[in-house]
Structures are given as structure tokens and as C-alpha cells.
Image (cartoon, rainbow, N blue to C red; front, side):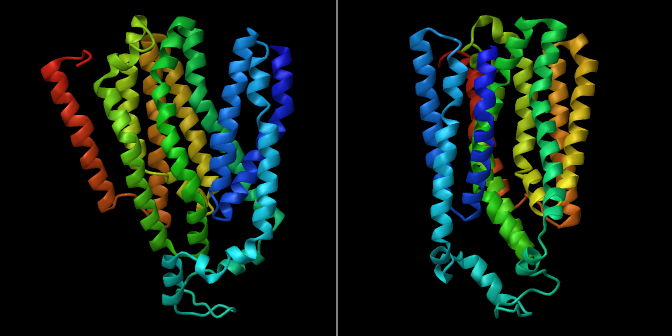
Length: 370
């Protein structure tokens, strides 16, 4: 284990660099490096590394071979970013500007120094960039770092506490019962990567109405991508857990509690990201810490008595707090909300197709293979 930890420690800086470099490429409106280098290249290479470790029959090689792909991936991301920066002048031609943003600029009233116009009360993005400084950067970034640690704590602490109070067998059941959340996060992560640069640009321009349109559209897509999974997990929980073995059926209540909670989370959309891109990273930090306190407090109170069901209630309360608090803040501070026509259509389609129909089928046919 010590050898594996050393290998992970060596690759950790490259993983951090990869995150940063790919974030910069997305800032230039280019999703290809993220898809090619991170989602495809790194993932496939990690699978190959794991296969080599298994073929060699060495558990000690598993972690190093899983981590090594971060090094060439970081180098590839750096080279790709350099190429993008060299060609940024051609990328920033008028044709590269999205038509909706061009229309926004054309409809604005006051005029910037370069001849484009600004809505009354809006702040020029160029003026904001001119006022950028290291102090402002760290004032925005430091709360983000701490909030990320709080989010990781929320995602991991309940498994540890279940193991402490009820032993590793119950912890294994709880871990298996919560894996569907990871699958749901794939859709959320994909939308977040694509939308975050757009939100940043629109808020820098002061185009809050257009940002609200993007917020509602991404929320509708998030519902369409994730609600089918969450609804089917709620309806067919025992069948889902049977994949792991008969003894895992004890986690059925966990699936129902967290599945219903994730329906609420998806309906709120990328609300924390919206709050952050408005520049309110300190608010996000407070929300994250509050959610962590709720999670840990309820876990310590409920897990000793109710086991994995208590852990699920604690995590569900934390997820609710982490979404409803920023939802209220975004609505009050910048008058944004995720509830548009597309959002309601997406909810209705998913509830009918993946809620009502499967429930009726289960009632008629039971929970077997049919």
C-alpha cells in the first residue's frame, strides 16, 4: 500500500494540471480536448493498465498503472492548449461569436470603447478583465477549494461512519446501493463542462436573461438524462441490487430515499455552478459547509439506531440543503430559476415513461425478469 501511495503522490500534480489545462481549453469554447484526452484517452489507458495489473496477478501494480495515464494526459492537454492559444485570433473572428450573443450585443444601448453596445446597468466584460488581479483571483478561488473538500466529505463520510458503527458488511451494502448516484453524475458532469464557460461569458456581459435561458435548457437536459435512471432505480430497487448478490437487497430503502432526493437535485439544475459563475464563490462555500454539517450531524444521530437507512436520510438532507439554499440565493440575487417550459415538459415525459408505466408493469407482472 505504501508503494501504491507513493505512485499516486507522484501523479497527483499531473492530475491537478490536467484539470486546470482542460478547464482553460473549455474556456476557449473547445470541448474536444476534454473529450479526447480526459474522457477517452485517459479512461481507455486506465482500463488497459488495470487489465495489465490483473494479468500480472499483482494488486500492488493496480494503483500505479491506474494513475500513470495522468502524466501523458497532462502533457497532451498542455500542447493542445498551446495550439489553441496560437490560433485564438482566428477563433475570435465575428463568425465564431454565437448568433444569440451577437444579437444581444446588437440590441444593447450604451456603447463600449470598441463600438459594441451595453445594456443599461450592465458592466462591460472588458472593464472587469482590466480590473482582474491576483488578490481577486484568490478571493474567488480559495472558497471554491474549501467547498470542493466539503463536497468530497459529503460523498464519502457516510460510508466510513456506517463501517464504524455497523461493520464492513453493512458498509458494502450501502456502497453498492449508492453506486447509481455515480452513474447519474456522468450526465451532470457532461452538462456542467459544456455549460460553465457559457455561463461565465454571459454573466461577464451582464446578459442575465440569456443566462436564465441557458440555465433552464441545461436543467431540462439534465432531467432527461438522469430522471429515467433515478425513477427506474426507485421502482426496481431490488432488481438493481440483485446484480451485487442476494444479501444486498437490504439496501432497497437506501435506493428509494436517495433516488427521490436526486429527482429534486436534478430539477434544481446546475444551481451551484450558476451561483459560482455569478462570482459568489463565498456563498457556495457557506452552502457546502452547511450541507456537510447537516450530513455529519444526522449521520451521527441516525446511523447508530437506523443503520444504512439513517445514512441515506443524512445524505438526502445534505443533498437537499446543497441545492435548495443556492436555488433561493440565485433567485433572489440575480433573478434566475430553472423552471421553464422545457423543464416541465422533461419532468412530465420522464414521470410518465419511467415512473407511471414501470409502476403499472410492476403491479401487473411483478418484479421478475419480465
